Image 1 (tube, each protein chain N blue to C red):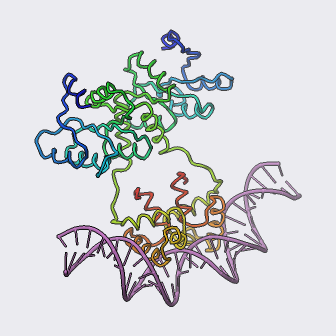
Image 2 (image 1 turned 60 degrees about the vertical axis):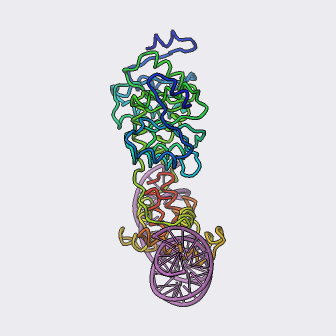
Length: 194
Length: 194
DNA sequence: CAAGAAATGCCACGAACGTGGTATAGTGAA
DNA sequence: TTCACTATACCACGTTCGTGGCATTTCTTG
């Protein structure tokens, strides 16, 4: 891989390592890499931890994962740790070169399967949107309550009387089955309301 | 676009519509489309709602979004609604054809920018916990507050006096820069504290 | 049109909250 | 041994909340 990269116009693979531990000292120098290409199934420190360390030491360095693992958990954790691209090892070498160019251009290179997986995981994040039958006005008021405003402040904001806001809030509590502001706000976030 | 698709080997664009409402009746026939190419800024029913309807009527139909909107919210919602691909309108037509092939092959075609955005959103789901210097006790109390308990209830739960909880709460408010329960709870969710 | 929902408005009262203090005891770092 | 922080505890005051009930005015929608 290093050979191929060095043979490519404008690219240079300055270092190769067998583990994250070996690579870390490199970050004390002034020459920080633009891109790191790494596996995640590595001896010693896991690649996921490695990504975190690298990102900590050099936030601007982009990290592309090249691995055989395609399970949701690995993909998810790698991305959360800061990876900007995720390729599988069955990718032809020219695809890897292409990916490096893409990540440098501000993209996020991924295999077809991985991209599909990522969107799939994404979609799972909010299938549930329990409907409590809140009216538009109620949602609006709830919105301001979540922001931390008092009844009077909400009333001022919406040009309503304090009493009206009070009534709406009563109804909201009934619909959400709560009886405190904190309970309502929690519910909003827990169940992705609004 | 329809012309280009029909000019492509193995593809056929059987219908074109100006709104989701017009397209929906088509799903009562036996010939369900393999792929739908749609914008999301549409007259009448929003494209997001459209995706949900389409997916409801024909779960196996793949949906690719082609639009000018690239804000996080639109992208996120479109994917959650069931879109399998997301392209921006500045994509050259041949890229669109390519995307249709890719989605049929089980992939998830995305522009570079979109792919990058998606990974970015993804990453937000886990990691950071901004540190406001809350002590363990304070976190514990905050936890119960988020659950909607009153000061007295928290005191009972932790075998503390009401006054102690009161003091802790005061300190929490100062550290979080809020002055209402709702504000504190919001902050907890917004910034993934606890 | 009639029925029903939503939005608006008002009152009153006890409970809970937010904020200003003060104070003691323990722990760990400077 | 100070110094700083944390956890604990108490008090008082004014503000805001949660809840009970009631009433009027739009809108939808069948």
